[in-house]
Amino acid sequence: MKVVVDFDLCESNAVCMGIAPEVFEVREDDFLYILDENPPESMRPKLEEAVRGCPRAAIRLED
Image 1: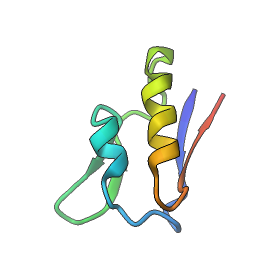
Image 2: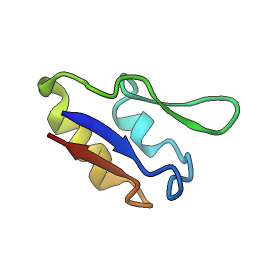
Image 3: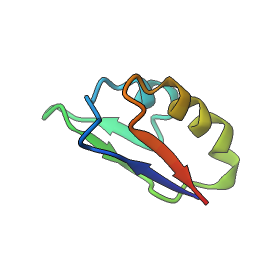
Image 4: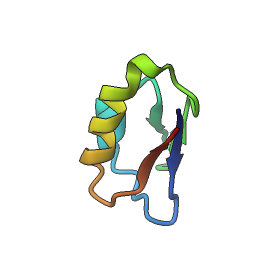
């Protein structure tokens, strides 16, 4: 599984970071960073929640 973010859509509002801080981080520069582009399959439910929770629909998962 790969985490993909469309940074043109992303507003760095940190909703995803609140759900999966192991994978997403908004830093002091107000940009979102992906900490783990290929997280373990065990994180899929949490990442699916982050995808659904993104207000800009900027996150997707690829298999």
